Image (cartoon, rainbow, N blue to C red; front, side, top):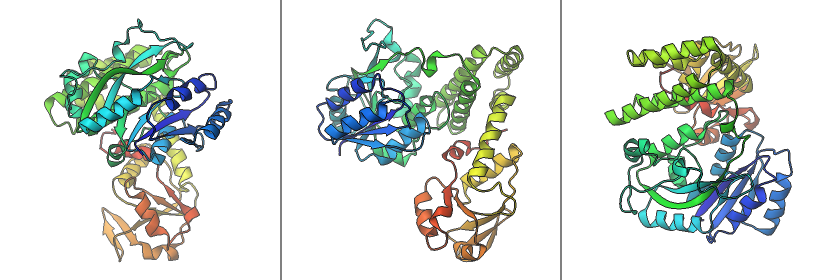
Length: 430
């Protein structure tokens, strides 16, 4: 399979037929279209089913409602194509763009290939005079250039050559899985940090300047509404992620660029705050950055009280989902690496109660061991301990750990710690 088109679907019955027609009419025979129904309340699912009955290239996935990021992640997990591309279900593709993109990516052996986009109105008419410089991409070289992704970003971000979007590009599926390029769930502006991580991972980036993606402008979209606490929380979360990469910057230019990206997110918050006291606090911290950048960033990224409330509620809910909230319960923890250490630090930082008794198991030991002040048990002791739940604290090795757990724990007892923990890996939470 050459290409997997991933299309999250939610409340788009008005635009979905046009989107599907534009995808299915592409002259690329070797592709699949993964439509992820996010428990849409309108007639979108019925439309998908009608199209799927006529065209076997369509596969409908129906996970529980989880938002755009989770829908994209689920579609990517199921993808069989050598490449993946994301299409929002209220947008459209230009005729022939997927074949052009795949052929060029193959010819240049690109990990990532980005193509241009143009805006269209709600009625589907192209708005070619709408100032599309932020949606277009261009090759600064001869047209067949191949670039290291992070170098291209550092060199050309300020020249509007980089578009902040998940759509309008091809990505090798192998690259996505190797570098764990999943989208952060439960935030707005989820493309912001994702696109940076993609460029950072790409060793071979290519550009196709053709306008192949039609982006529909809608007044009710996330980018056209009055900011809420979730908008501020989302920007702070993205700022945290940029800040984590700042510490590992490979060059001074990359470090300066990442600092500027954090600046942009914080500037958006400063300009959007309506509460005078919060605005004054953010402005003061923002001004401090030039004199004491690291302290100011850490203080700011800790967030205003509303963000701490969001984080406290989120961590408390994860504790409940993992079965750690019941006094007297026994919870087995498997995978005591960075994910576990991060979770342990978070519950301490946010003063979260964990009433259950926690037992730590290691898949690689045969006898109990003491490590970092904790007792680790071999899996062979799990049947005797008989935990009520078993939580896998590993993103990379979750599948292998599940297999190793089969002789020791019933499948219905086993769950995985939340993906979001990986974005708190570095010690940048104050």
